[in-house]
Amino acid sequence: MKNNTVVIGAGISGLLVARELASRGAQVQVLEKSRGVGGRMSTKRVGSAVFDQGAQFFSARDEHFDARVRCWARKGVVAPIANPTSGTERWVARPSMTGLAKALAKDLRVSLKSQVQAVRWHDCGCWEVDVVGGELVRGERLVMASPVPQSLALLEAGGVILPEQLEASLHDLQYNPCLALLATLDGPSAVPEGGEAITTGNLRWVSDNVRKGLAQNVPSAITFHLTPEFSAANYGASENELFTQLADELKPWLGGATIVGQAMHRWRYSEPKTTFAEDHLWLPELRLGFCGDAFGGPRVEGAAISGLALARKIVGTLQTP
Image (cartoon, rainbow, N blue to C red; front, top):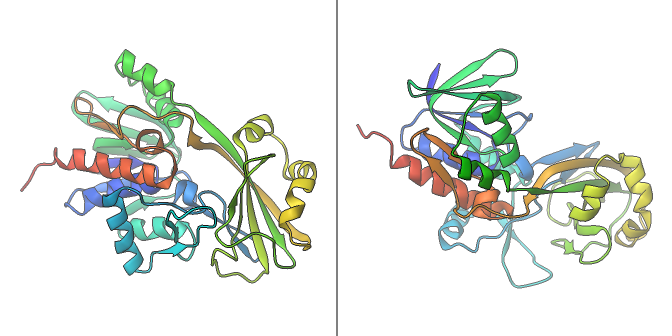
């Protein structure tokens, strides 16, 4: 089946592109390799506990994005959360961070567990996307909303050659990894409402998902994000190794409670170290677009702004009836 636009990646950036195009009558198919939407806004269940394992909140400093966020708030999709460190307003999705992605994906054609292994451009003006399992998806336009190194690997696998200078610039975009430790406690934690940023040691961020307002059947469910430096040096370590190694640093946040359940998640592409010169990239001769936090800036807001900017660019190329 031929689609007007194929979007690879169902994080907030890719979903916003897809939703904006679909709202203008374009046919869009989103391909996502994971079991659910949201990307780094995903949620994980460990036993009876629920964790936001990636992004813990987001801000809306851009006035246009802020207006959109407040519209989502009126619909109950997002809600403000206390900020213990500054006056900057923070937002969380409801019922968990992946709730925003699920709301954006509603009524879109999203194919989950669709691992793309190559993309090919045909001179007839058509993109061919090769999905593991033998499926071929075709489209007139292609949006790469996955981490840049993954996007470049898909283009290379399909023999797509980008302009030399541009390709070098994209290859220069590197990401920090992040290891996330998830701990269920048998009592209240010592984490303040809204979480706490850490500036020393190996912990970068600590957040109690119960205090954030995620409905739980446990007293506490803490997400620990480790620093980029520690994560890079210990990326291959096991869950048990990390909990043992960091026991002394985790202990002050437990509030005297005991860890009764634990898990971990490896974010290989947690955040970009540097960003592209523009908030999106559109190659009209190939009808190929790139978006994400490596373009719009780190964090949820940057990814969202990038997706919306690329959507506006593509909308300008759509044929009107």
